[in-house]
Length: 107
Image 1 (cartoon, rainbow, N blue to C red):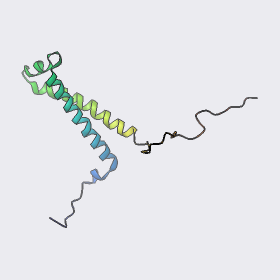
Image 2 (cartoon, rainbow, N blue to C red):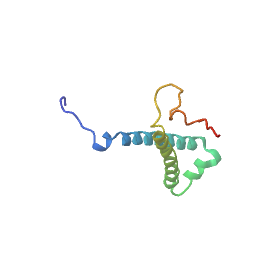
Image 3 (tube, rainbow, N blue to C red):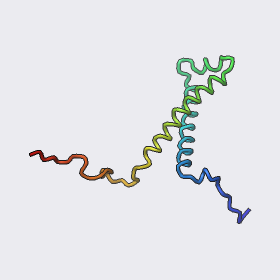
Image 4 (tube, rainbow, N blue to C red):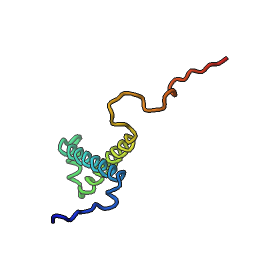
């Protein structure tokens, strides 16, 4: 319908939450990709062990959950730590000047 503007929920308008949600989604996608790769490559008979179990969904879910927690939190943490960096391509130090090597005169 033209003329009707759809508003995003209030939580999605918060930039920090959006940053964390996007990076969590990227980490989850990477985790799904890696678990799929492990099942496809079958190292050490892992695929065979999982799918011959009585409940392969539980084993697959636990494996995927571990990967999602690991890669999701890594992506979110690296995004938080990179927030203070500039986007410019300069190689100048970002801290206060003169604190790296100050000359101390002892007399």
